[in-house]
Amino acid sequence: MEWVAITLILFFAALTHGSIGFGFPMVATPLLALFMDLPSAILLTLIPTLALNLTSIVSEGEFLRAFRQYLPLAVLTTLGSGLGTVLLLQIDSELFKLVLAAAIFLYLLLQRVRFQLSWIRDHPTQSRVLFGLSAGLLGGLTNTMLPVMIVYTLEAYSSNKRAIIQASNVCFFWGKVIQIALFMVDGRFTAGVLLDISWILVLSLLAAGLGIRLKTRIDPALYRKLLLGLLGLIAITLVVQVFL
Image (cartoon, rainbow, N blue to C red; front, side, top):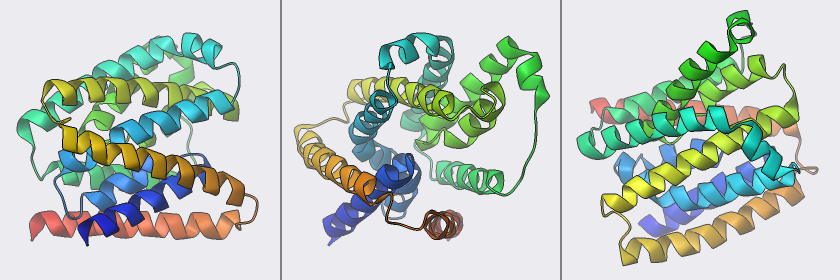
């Protein structure tokens, strides 16, 4: 029964990613964390997320130029991801689920609040360091750096959709690479886990492809509202779960 639930969760998360262009770890991780520890939830999603991020980068075109252009930011997020992952693996606290819930609440808040942080554009180097390390740290601890990346990329790239997508996914990609390496060093990638991940990868790619095909047939406004509502419910459930 547990694997049925896991299959449905991962299918839904990948379908979401394909239909709106992001969201696999943001949706899958908190749902999985409702009935397993956070490191295990992250472990199952690492390689599928890496594949989906790479697909997103390539789909925007000129992916080699994107890797070079956003390398400085990616280095910072990778360092932060490494630190966050080490803390996650060494401490393995249920309280990190609260960090995940807080990240979701921040993301939901960003969908409703319009703001400007001119400091990001006025001080590009300092802001890149601050937001790069912060996004990476959050990604290492919770498997989602999206809330921090939204704040930074919207201001740094003046709402240029292609730049936002490529910069974010390049950072996500390298963040997953360092997480996978550290999980391997920690001995988490057993033969059984790799077998599980192999079918999860196939399922995720198929579901994401279906999501891309359904993108034009789903009312975007309604779908977005339903997804945001689900994320809010998940975050509340995580908080309740930690304290009960």
